[in-house]
Image 1 (cartoon, rainbow, N blue to C red):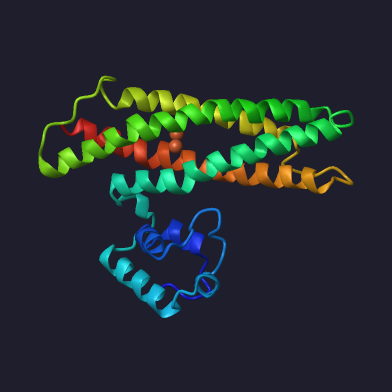
Image 2 (cartoon, helix red, strand yellow; image 1 turned 180 degrees about the vertical axis):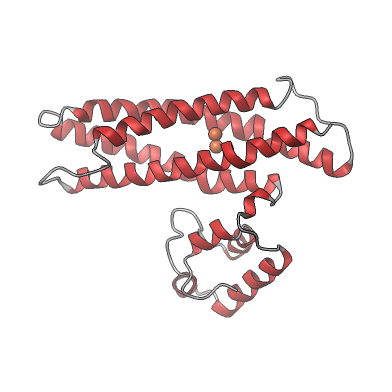
Length: 238
Ligand SMILES: [Fe+2]
Ligand SMILES: [Fe+2]
């Protein structure tokens, strides 16, 4: 049973069934989710008791597990990744592009590593934008179709790419490219340590980079360790 002081985002991560409840009440559980249930109810004039009841009912309907995404439906997991990871990734990459340009332009002469950081942010943007498009338009719908076919006992859906393991291998290779770029940024920034006298924009760049790093590692972990292996296992059943 969640309490009023629980953070929206934490609950969305721990209890997948809560995501549908938040959507029903119009509550942001992603970037704006770092608020307690009580705070968000007060801000949006939602009766706290109604929200808590909805969350409790959803939790009752879905047994809680140590790692719920290992047993939630693949459709729910794919929807969660698109909403909670892809959406914020697009927004943050747009912000990072602007911040990296500004900070490099203003401080590049005294901090030469900023040129490389700006270039790496651009590289991540160029990699992630088509990557997420391919997942959303092709791979995730196919995985959902695979799950539905399994549930209904129908034949596996046809795919021009052959077995689902093929596009998954390509997606994982792209994850590695982005992971390497983030690791290089981490090294260049000494784990996001600000230089003395850094201006607010410099501060915003490093804070956003650190948050983006955490978001991306969570995003990739959900796909590499849960969604993709489960999809491959499902495909192998037929
Ligand atoms: Fe993704
Ligand atoms: Fe991905």
